[in-house]
Length: 270
Image (cartoon, rainbow, N blue to C red; front, side, top):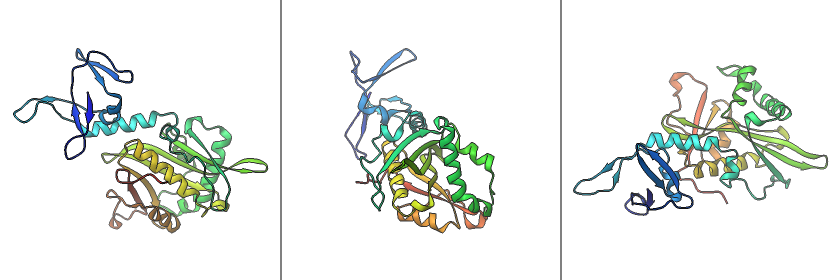
């Protein structure tokens, strides 16, 4: 099984007899059938349900279950030990607008040291406690800690080099998930220490997520923002996010907005 360039959508699916397995082919055996999946087609075909159809127009049509494909993409991406590294999403060199060199550490929440997690939670609390107190959710510390330590939570932590050594200054908490039928890379948190805000760090982190989302085959990036958090809303709108179709209406009386940005049409940042 493979894919090739053809037709209006640019791709068509192919079935051919094979006498041997290619070096990087994936082998699947089911119901007595032995199938090799071409290496170049594996991401395209993950989760696909195929039925062979023969009719007057065609003898190679394949029926696809798109929802299952998306679920498989999400599951595969979530299992990656280091998605930013796998997708070559980290910038080779990166600096703040005032010239400080940045370094990045990518970890699963379950692998964070106690010291690192304490720093993550303190920064979240410093930046967001008052906003949560104003919200309908309220500030629930145990619940938030559980969210940050979830098995599906992934982190990118940003460090800056100083005379005394490396110092953490920002983090991003993201997850791969299905949302209303869409394969989604969800930005749960993006937090920067107060003295380093407005220095381009948030934009760098979102550029990394944008690259991961595109290369992982996600439909869109998403984020939840308090409706009264004008600073955060301005940031996301500036980098191309708009109100998502699943966002609650004002009539529902909710005090948050769901924002999104397509991964399908976005291009890599240089």
